[in-house]
Length: 446
Image (cartoon, rainbow, N blue to C red; front, side, top):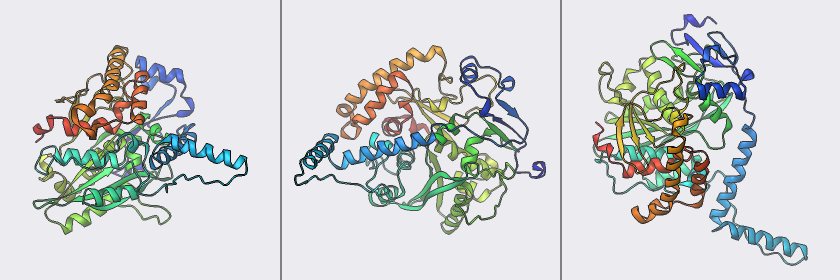
C-alpha cells in the first residue's frame, strides 16, 4: 500500500531496531546525549517490522500473579502470619496422619474483592466527601481516583463506581493493540450525574507494574509523524489504535469479529451515541502514567478526523477557538514524566499546562517540570534526600491529616526502593491522590 496516498497515514517515522541495542549504546544515549541518527540501532523513514525485546515479560507477569495473589490472601485472612501458621499447622498434622482442620480463606481472582498491587499500596476507594461538585478540585480529584481504580479488574471497578461513588459505568473493557496482536489497552467510562450537568469521564489505565510489554513501550523512544499533528510517541499511538496496515489513522475501519475494536474507534463511537442523547452532557479525559498519554492523544486524533461534535462537547466551545485545555500533573521527582530524557536530538516535548507539586504538595504552574533529565548527575543527591524524607513522612501523614492518609507496609517497601532508585515511588498513584486533595493550585485552574 502507498501510504502517501492516505492523508491519515504517517509521513515519517523513527523506530528503534532492538536487535542492535546494547547496554553501552543505551548508556551513551541517556547519559551523554549521543546523536540518535548516528546510532546503529536506529532506522529512519523506511518500512520495517518493529520487534521489541520483551525478555522479562512472562517472568514478570507470573511474578506479579504470585505477588498479588499472596497480598490478597494475606488481606482476606487478616495477616501474613496467620496464613503461614495455618499452613505449617496443616503440614504438621498431615505428617502425623492426624485430623486436619486448617482454614485459609480463598479469593476469586476476577472478583470485586481482588485488589491489584496498586490497590494494596493505596487502599482508598471512597471519594473525599469534603470536595463537592462546585469545588475547583472536584473534577481533578474524581479523575485521579478514577485513574487509580482503573488498575483494578472490571468487577472491582463496577462495584466501586456504582456502589460507593453512586455513579454509572457506561463501558469497561480491554481494547485491541494491532501491533501487539492482543487486547492490552484498558479503559472505562463513568457517568457523573448532577443537577446542572452530566459528565462522562473517560479513564485510560496506566502502565501495570508487572507488565513488561507496557514498560517496554513506555521507555521506547520511537516516533511517527502525522499530518497536522507533528511527531508523536509511536508506542502510545499503537496502544490507542494505530493501524498496522498503513501505519495511520483511517477515519473508519472494518469490524474484525475475531477480536475487540481498538480503543479510539470503540470509544469515539460510543461517546457519540451517548452525547447525542444528552444535550447537557460533556466529557473529560484522564489517566495516570500511560493512561495520561492516551488521554492527551485521544482528542488529537479527534482533531485529525475533524470530529467537531465531540471536540465541542469536550471543550465547551467552538473548535476554532483552540480552547482545549490539557493539564499535566507532575509530582516531585516522578521518573515517568522525565522519559524519554531531555536529549538534544529527541523530538519529544511535553505540552499543556504543567501543574508541578513538591514533596509537601505545594503546587505551581510551570512550563516544564524541573530536572527534565532523570539521569542527570546533578540531581542524584537531591532525589535521594527527597526519597529519604518521603519515607519519614510515610509514618507521620496519618497524624497530620487523618486515617485516610495511613500508609501500609507495601507502600513503605516501595519507598525503601526509592532510596536506591529515587523517583520510582513518586510515580505511584498514592501521592497523586494526596495532592489532588491537599494541593491548593487547583483554585487557579480556569
